[in-house]
Length: 373
Image 1 (cartoon, one colour):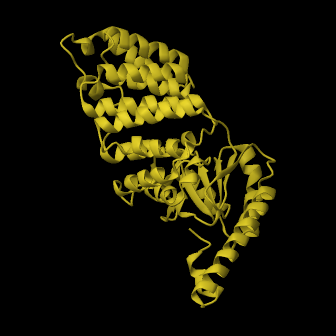
Image 2 (cartoon, helix red, strand yellow; image 1 turned 90 degrees about the vertical axis):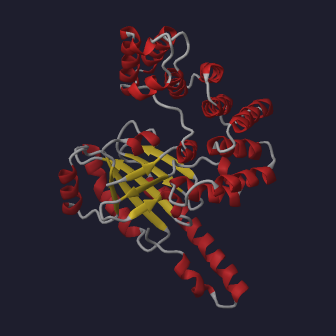
Image 3 (tube, one colour; image 1 turned 90 degrees about the horizontal axis):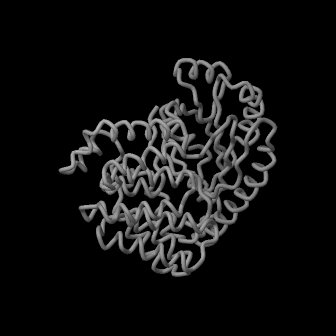
Protein backbone atom coordinates (compact mmCIF):
# COMPACT_ATOMS: atom_id res chain seq x y z
CA UNK A 1 0.00 0.00 0.00
CA UNK A 2 1.49 3.35 -0.97
CA UNK A 3 1.00 6.74 0.63
CA UNK A 4 1.75 10.25 -0.48
CA UNK A 5 1.57 12.41 2.61
CA UNK A 6 3.25 15.72 3.24
CA UNK A 7 2.23 18.75 5.25
CA UNK A 8 1.06 21.35 2.74
CA UNK A 9 4.11 23.59 2.87
CA UNK A 10 6.47 20.62 2.86
CA UNK A 11 4.71 19.18 -0.18
CA UNK A 12 5.22 22.44 -2.02
CA UNK A 13 8.84 22.74 -0.93
CA UNK A 14 9.53 19.14 -1.89
CA UNK A 15 7.96 19.71 -5.29
CA UNK A 16 10.91 21.80 -6.38
CA UNK A 17 13.63 20.76 -3.95
CA UNK A 18 13.61 23.74 -1.59
CA UNK A 19 13.21 21.68 1.56
CA UNK A 20 16.25 21.80 3.83
CA UNK A 21 18.50 18.76 4.08
CA UNK A 22 17.99 16.56 7.11
CA UNK A 23 20.74 15.65 9.54
CA UNK A 24 22.66 12.59 8.47
CA UNK A 25 25.69 11.51 6.51
CA UNK A 26 24.58 13.29 3.33
CA UNK A 27 23.54 16.42 5.18
CA UNK A 28 26.77 16.59 7.10
CA UNK A 29 28.85 16.19 3.95
CA UNK A 30 26.90 19.00 2.33
CA UNK A 31 28.12 21.45 4.98
CA UNK A 32 31.66 20.22 5.56
CA UNK A 33 34.10 23.06 6.24
CA UNK A 34 37.83 23.34 6.62
CA UNK A 35 37.34 22.76 10.35
CA UNK A 36 36.49 19.14 9.58
CA UNK A 37 33.88 18.99 12.33
CA UNK A 38 31.90 16.35 10.43
CA UNK A 39 34.59 13.79 11.28
CA UNK A 40 34.67 14.76 14.94
CA UNK A 41 33.44 11.74 16.97
CA UNK A 42 31.80 14.03 19.53
CA UNK A 43 29.91 15.86 16.79
CA UNK A 44 28.74 12.61 15.20
CA UNK A 45 27.69 11.24 18.58
CA UNK A 46 25.68 14.38 19.33
CA UNK A 47 23.90 14.18 15.98
CA UNK A 48 23.14 10.50 16.53
CA UNK A 49 21.81 11.22 20.01
CA UNK A 50 19.64 14.04 18.67
CA UNK A 51 18.09 11.77 16.04
CA UNK A 52 17.53 9.04 18.63
CA UNK A 53 15.87 11.34 21.15
CA UNK A 54 13.74 12.94 18.44
CA UNK A 55 12.61 9.51 17.27
CA UNK A 56 11.65 8.63 20.84
CA UNK A 57 9.85 11.97 21.17
CA UNK A 58 12.19 13.06 23.96
CA UNK A 59 12.17 16.56 22.55
CA UNK A 60 14.07 18.41 25.29
CA UNK A 61 16.91 15.88 25.15
CA UNK A 62 16.90 16.11 21.35
CA UNK A 63 17.19 19.89 21.57
CA UNK A 64 20.17 19.61 23.92
CA UNK A 65 21.89 17.10 21.62
CA UNK A 66 21.41 19.18 18.48
CA UNK A 67 22.61 22.30 20.30
CA UNK A 68 25.76 20.42 21.29
CA UNK A 69 26.33 19.38 17.67
CA UNK A 70 25.84 22.97 16.54
CA UNK A 71 28.33 24.19 19.15
CA UNK A 72 30.89 21.62 18.01
CA UNK A 73 30.43 22.86 14.43
CA UNK A 74 31.07 26.46 15.55
CA UNK A 75 27.48 27.20 14.58
CA UNK A 76 28.07 26.22 10.94
CA UNK A 77 26.08 22.99 10.60
CA UNK A 78 22.97 23.98 8.66
CA UNK A 79 21.37 20.49 8.80
CA UNK A 80 21.84 20.54 12.59
CA UNK A 81 20.17 23.94 12.79
CA UNK A 82 17.37 22.66 10.57
CA UNK A 83 16.89 19.64 12.82
CA UNK A 84 16.93 21.84 15.93
CA UNK A 85 14.34 24.11 14.36
CA UNK A 86 12.08 21.14 13.60
CA UNK A 87 12.22 19.88 17.17
CA UNK A 88 11.61 23.34 18.58
CA UNK A 89 8.51 23.62 16.41
CA UNK A 90 7.30 20.23 17.66
CA UNK A 91 7.93 21.35 21.24
CA UNK A 92 6.11 24.63 20.50
CA UNK A 93 9.21 26.63 21.46
CA UNK A 94 8.40 29.11 18.74
CA UNK A 95 10.50 31.98 20.06
CA UNK A 96 13.58 29.74 20.05
CA UNK A 97 12.64 28.42 16.60
CA UNK A 98 12.60 31.97 15.23
CA UNK A 99 16.11 32.54 16.59
CA UNK A 100 17.31 29.24 15.10
CA UNK A 101 15.91 30.17 11.69
CA UNK A 102 17.69 33.52 11.90
CA UNK A 103 20.95 31.70 12.64
CA UNK A 104 20.36 29.46 9.61
CA UNK A 105 19.93 32.54 7.44
CA UNK A 106 23.21 33.92 8.76
CA UNK A 107 25.32 30.84 8.02
CA UNK A 108 23.58 29.71 4.82
CA UNK A 109 25.82 29.99 1.78
CA UNK A 110 23.32 29.60 -1.07
CA UNK A 111 20.22 31.59 -2.02
CA UNK A 112 18.07 28.45 -1.85
CA UNK A 113 19.06 27.63 1.74
CA UNK A 114 18.71 31.28 2.75
CA UNK A 115 15.23 31.20 1.23
CA UNK A 116 14.27 28.09 3.18
CA UNK A 117 15.61 29.63 6.40
CA UNK A 118 13.62 32.85 5.87
CA UNK A 119 10.52 30.77 5.13
CA UNK A 120 11.09 28.81 8.35
CA UNK A 121 11.39 32.06 10.28
CA UNK A 122 8.07 33.24 8.88
CA UNK A 123 6.42 29.94 9.68
CA UNK A 124 7.60 30.11 13.29
CA UNK A 125 6.33 33.69 13.61
CA UNK A 126 2.89 32.58 12.44
CA UNK A 127 2.92 29.61 14.83
CA UNK A 128 3.91 31.88 17.72
CA UNK A 129 0.83 34.00 17.01
CA UNK A 130 -1.49 31.03 17.57
CA UNK A 131 -5.07 31.01 16.34
CA UNK A 132 -5.39 34.80 16.56
CA UNK A 133 -2.06 36.36 15.58
CA UNK A 134 -1.71 40.11 15.99
CA UNK A 135 -1.46 42.28 12.87
CA UNK A 136 2.16 43.14 13.66
CA UNK A 137 3.03 39.43 13.84
CA UNK A 138 1.37 38.85 10.48
CA UNK A 139 3.31 41.76 8.99
CA UNK A 140 6.59 40.29 10.29
CA UNK A 141 5.68 36.90 8.85
CA UNK A 142 4.78 38.52 5.52
CA UNK A 143 8.17 40.26 5.47
CA UNK A 144 9.94 36.95 6.17
CA UNK A 145 8.11 35.14 3.37
CA UNK A 146 8.89 38.01 1.00
CA UNK A 147 12.57 37.73 1.93
CA UNK A 148 12.37 34.02 1.16
CA UNK A 149 10.88 34.78 -2.25
CA UNK A 150 13.54 37.40 -2.97
CA UNK A 151 16.17 34.71 -2.46
CA UNK A 152 14.28 32.11 -4.50
CA UNK A 153 11.23 33.06 -6.57
CA UNK A 154 10.40 29.37 -6.94
CA UNK A 155 9.95 28.78 -3.20
CA UNK A 156 6.32 27.70 -3.45
CA UNK A 157 6.09 26.95 0.26
CA UNK A 158 6.88 30.59 1.07
CA UNK A 159 4.40 31.75 -1.57
CA UNK A 160 1.69 29.50 -0.16
CA UNK A 161 2.23 30.62 3.43
CA UNK A 162 2.41 34.25 2.38
CA UNK A 163 -0.96 33.89 0.66
CA UNK A 164 -2.46 32.61 3.93
CA UNK A 165 -0.97 35.56 5.80
CA UNK A 166 -2.31 38.00 3.21
CA UNK A 167 -5.79 36.50 3.58
CA UNK A 168 -5.56 37.02 7.34
CA UNK A 169 -4.58 40.63 6.69
CA UNK A 170 -7.66 41.07 4.54
CA UNK A 171 -5.78 41.25 1.22
CA UNK A 172 -7.92 38.60 -0.46
CA UNK A 173 -7.25 39.60 -4.07
CA UNK A 174 -3.47 39.28 -3.65
CA UNK A 175 -3.90 36.07 -1.66
CA UNK A 176 -5.92 34.59 -4.54
CA UNK A 177 -3.23 35.62 -7.05
CA UNK A 178 -0.54 33.99 -4.93
CA UNK A 179 -2.51 30.76 -4.58
CA UNK A 180 -3.05 30.74 -8.35
CA UNK A 181 0.67 31.29 -8.96
CA UNK A 182 1.44 28.52 -6.49
CA UNK A 183 -0.96 26.21 -8.29
CA UNK A 184 0.78 26.78 -11.62
CA UNK A 185 4.07 25.61 -10.15
CA UNK A 186 3.05 22.15 -8.94
CA UNK A 187 1.93 18.98 -10.65
CA UNK A 188 -1.74 17.91 -10.52
CA UNK A 189 -0.46 14.56 -9.17
CA UNK A 190 0.88 16.29 -6.04
CA UNK A 191 -1.53 15.86 -3.09
CA UNK A 192 -1.20 19.59 -2.46
CA UNK A 193 -2.54 20.53 -5.92
CA UNK A 194 -6.24 20.04 -5.31
CA UNK A 195 -6.18 21.84 -1.97
CA UNK A 196 -4.31 24.82 -3.41
CA UNK A 197 -6.90 24.90 -6.19
CA UNK A 198 -9.65 25.13 -3.58
CA UNK A 199 -7.78 27.95 -1.84
CA UNK A 200 -7.33 29.83 -5.11
CA UNK A 201 -11.09 29.64 -5.61
CA UNK A 202 -11.86 30.60 -2.02
CA UNK A 203 -8.87 32.05 -0.09
CA UNK A 204 -10.91 32.20 3.14
CA UNK A 205 -10.90 28.40 3.20
CA UNK A 206 -7.13 28.48 3.77
CA UNK A 207 -7.73 29.83 7.28
CA UNK A 208 -10.00 26.98 8.34
CA UNK A 209 -8.71 24.05 10.35
CA UNK A 210 -8.12 21.41 7.70
CA UNK A 211 -6.91 17.84 7.98
CA UNK A 212 -3.49 17.13 6.43
CA UNK A 213 -3.64 16.57 2.67
CA UNK A 214 -2.95 12.95 1.77
CA UNK A 215 -3.27 10.42 -1.01
CA UNK A 216 -3.17 6.71 -0.21
CA UNK A 217 -3.55 3.45 -2.10
CA UNK A 218 -6.22 1.44 -0.31
CA UNK A 219 -6.40 -2.33 0.19
CA UNK A 220 -8.51 -2.80 -2.94
CA UNK A 221 -6.02 -0.82 -5.06
CA UNK A 222 -8.15 2.31 -5.30
CA UNK A 223 -6.68 5.76 -4.69
CA UNK A 224 -8.07 7.80 -1.80
CA UNK A 225 -7.37 11.54 -1.95
CA UNK A 226 -8.85 13.43 0.97
CA UNK A 227 -9.16 16.64 -1.04
CA UNK A 228 -11.11 14.86 -3.77
CA UNK A 229 -13.94 14.16 -1.35
CA UNK A 230 -15.62 17.52 -2.00
CA UNK A 231 -19.29 17.59 -1.01
CA UNK A 232 -18.96 14.53 1.23
CA UNK A 233 -18.43 14.08 4.94
CA UNK A 234 -15.34 12.00 5.73
CA UNK A 235 -14.76 9.85 8.79
CA UNK A 236 -11.16 8.74 9.41
CA UNK A 237 -10.80 5.88 11.88
CA UNK A 238 -7.34 5.09 13.32
CA UNK A 239 -7.21 1.57 14.69
CA UNK A 240 -5.30 -1.77 14.78
CA UNK A 241 -6.25 -5.44 14.83
CA UNK A 242 -4.47 -5.93 18.17
CA UNK A 243 -6.34 -3.02 19.83
CA UNK A 244 -9.07 -4.35 22.15
CA UNK A 245 -11.11 -1.12 22.32
CA UNK A 246 -10.88 -0.85 18.51
CA UNK A 247 -12.35 -4.32 18.13
CA UNK A 248 -15.19 -3.37 20.47
CA UNK A 249 -15.90 -0.37 18.23
CA UNK A 250 -16.05 -2.46 15.05
CA UNK A 251 -19.81 -3.25 15.20
CA UNK A 252 -20.44 0.46 15.63
CA UNK A 253 -18.36 1.28 12.55
CA UNK A 254 -20.15 -1.37 10.49
CA UNK A 255 -23.45 0.16 11.56
CA UNK A 256 -22.23 3.60 10.44
CA UNK A 257 -21.15 2.21 7.07
CA UNK A 258 -24.57 0.62 6.57
CA UNK A 259 -26.64 3.55 7.85
CA UNK A 260 -24.99 6.16 5.66
CA UNK A 261 -24.48 4.06 2.53
CA UNK A 262 -25.52 5.95 -0.59
CA UNK A 263 -25.31 9.31 1.19
CA UNK A 264 -22.62 12.02 0.81
CA UNK A 265 -20.31 10.18 3.18
CA UNK A 266 -17.12 8.14 2.98
CA UNK A 267 -15.21 6.34 5.71
CA UNK A 268 -11.58 5.24 5.74
CA UNK A 269 -10.04 3.02 8.40
CA UNK A 270 -6.31 3.49 8.92
CA UNK A 271 -4.60 0.54 10.59
CA UNK A 272 -1.34 0.68 12.55
CA UNK A 273 -0.69 -3.03 11.92
CA UNK A 274 2.83 -4.06 10.94
CA UNK A 275 1.86 -7.50 9.61
CA UNK A 276 0.08 -7.05 6.26
CA UNK A 277 -1.29 -10.60 6.19
CA UNK A 278 -2.84 -10.34 9.66
CA UNK A 279 -4.44 -7.05 8.72
CA UNK A 280 -5.83 -8.31 5.37
CA UNK A 281 -7.25 -11.46 6.92
CA UNK A 282 -8.89 -9.47 9.72
CA UNK A 283 -10.49 -7.03 7.28
CA UNK A 284 -11.85 -9.86 5.12
CA UNK A 285 -13.03 -11.97 8.05
CA UNK A 286 -14.94 -9.08 9.63
CA UNK A 287 -16.34 -7.83 6.30
CA UNK A 288 -14.95 -4.32 6.63
CA UNK A 289 -16.20 -3.25 3.22
CA UNK A 290 -15.31 0.46 3.38
CA UNK A 291 -11.93 2.01 2.43
CA UNK A 292 -9.04 0.32 4.23
CA UNK A 293 -5.42 1.49 4.49
CA UNK A 294 -2.45 0.14 6.48
CA UNK A 295 -0.26 2.88 7.93
CA UNK A 296 2.71 0.66 8.76
CA UNK A 297 5.21 3.52 9.04
CA UNK A 298 2.75 5.68 11.06
CA UNK A 299 3.22 8.66 8.75
CA UNK A 300 -0.49 9.29 8.51
CA UNK A 301 -0.98 8.87 12.25
CA UNK A 302 1.88 11.27 12.93
CA UNK A 303 0.42 13.82 10.53
CA UNK A 304 -2.83 13.73 12.49
CA UNK A 305 -0.93 13.71 15.82
CA UNK A 306 -2.58 10.45 16.85
CA UNK A 307 -1.28 9.34 20.24
CA UNK A 308 -3.85 6.63 21.09
CA UNK A 309 -6.33 4.40 19.30
CA UNK A 310 -9.12 4.27 18.48
CA UNK A 311 -9.14 7.88 17.30
CA UNK A 312 -11.67 9.46 14.96
CA UNK A 313 -11.51 12.55 12.78
CA UNK A 314 -14.54 14.00 11.00
CA UNK A 315 -14.12 16.33 8.01
CA UNK A 316 -17.23 18.16 6.83
CA UNK A 317 -18.37 18.52 3.21
CA UNK A 318 -16.35 21.74 2.86
CA UNK A 319 -13.16 19.93 3.86
CA UNK A 320 -13.00 21.47 7.33
CA UNK A 321 -11.81 19.31 10.24
CA UNK A 322 -14.75 19.59 12.63
CA UNK A 323 -14.17 16.87 15.23
CA UNK A 324 -11.34 14.95 16.83
CA UNK A 325 -12.46 12.17 19.14
CA UNK A 326 -10.50 9.58 21.04
CA UNK A 327 -11.45 6.31 22.65
CA UNK A 328 -14.48 4.09 22.69
CA UNK A 329 -17.94 5.48 23.25
CA UNK A 330 -17.34 8.67 21.24
CA UNK A 331 -20.55 10.09 19.77
CA UNK A 332 -19.38 9.64 16.19
CA UNK A 333 -22.77 8.74 14.80
CA UNK A 334 -24.56 11.77 16.21
CA UNK A 335 -22.02 14.20 14.77
CA UNK A 336 -22.12 12.47 11.39
CA UNK A 337 -25.92 12.70 11.14
CA UNK A 338 -25.88 16.48 11.47
CA UNK A 339 -23.01 16.99 9.02
CA UNK A 340 -24.41 14.57 6.43
CA UNK A 341 -27.83 16.22 6.63
CA UNK A 342 -26.14 19.56 5.99
CA UNK A 343 -24.16 18.07 3.07
CA UNK A 344 -27.35 16.65 1.54
CA UNK A 345 -29.08 20.01 1.82
CA UNK A 346 -26.12 21.77 0.19
CA UNK A 347 -26.08 19.16 -2.58
CA UNK A 348 -29.80 19.60 -3.26
CA UNK A 349 -29.46 23.38 -3.36
CA UNK A 350 -26.53 23.15 -5.77
CA UNK A 351 -28.42 20.75 -8.04
CA UNK A 352 -31.49 22.97 -7.98
CA UNK A 353 -29.43 26.03 -8.86
CA UNK A 354 -27.69 24.20 -11.70
CA UNK A 355 -31.03 22.89 -12.95
CA UNK A 356 -32.49 26.39 -13.05
CA UNK A 357 -29.43 27.61 -14.89
CA UNK A 358 -29.36 24.87 -17.53
CA UNK A 359 -33.05 24.06 -17.75
CA UNK A 360 -32.17 20.38 -17.60
CA UNK A 361 -33.48 19.69 -14.12
CA UNK A 362 -31.73 18.58 -10.92
CA UNK A 363 -31.30 15.02 -12.15
CA UNK A 364 -28.82 16.20 -14.77
CA UNK A 365 -26.21 16.97 -12.10
CA UNK A 366 -26.48 13.80 -10.06
CA UNK A 367 -23.50 12.15 -11.74
CA UNK A 368 -21.19 14.90 -10.53
CA UNK A 369 -21.73 13.86 -6.92
CA UNK A 370 -20.62 10.24 -6.62
CA UNK A 371 -21.18 8.61 -3.26
CA UNK A 372 -18.06 6.49 -3.43
CA UNK A 373 -14.40 7.58 -3.73
